[in-house]
Length: 163
Image 1: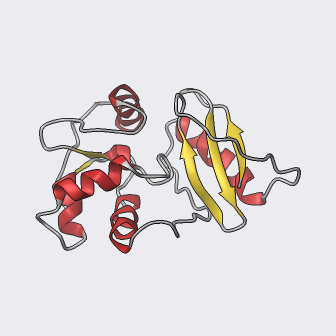
Image 2: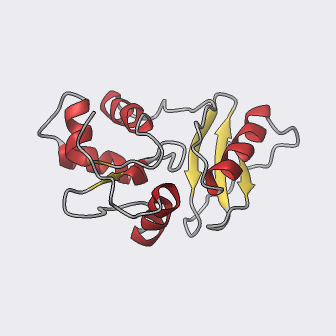
């Protein structure tokens, strides 16, 4: 495993990757296990750096970089793939996401997938909220609110359960 660190307005973001793509994003404050530095930086990291800069400037971004999801279950992958489709500046509920993956009674299970999302920001789990409020987030509720505000300039005003 190799890692790269990117400066951002929220602090240092560490990305762990293999030849197959990014397999883990560590947000500021998270413990980052030791990983080697790559003397030859893969091209996809340059694209990721440009995308992160654009994202933190408030622009919608498609993080179109290779991801490595091999360690996840089919259900987790399905949930994360649907989460990835939530547009910039919009939020959905855990129940909405559960219905999208064909498991309308599995909002809690979806919440667990979101809580364990190994690729925050790249797979925007911060855009998925509880019916009654923010819900959890690996980077903490303050960071989740900050990311939502960055994207929509209005907090939770755009919660929807529509497709």
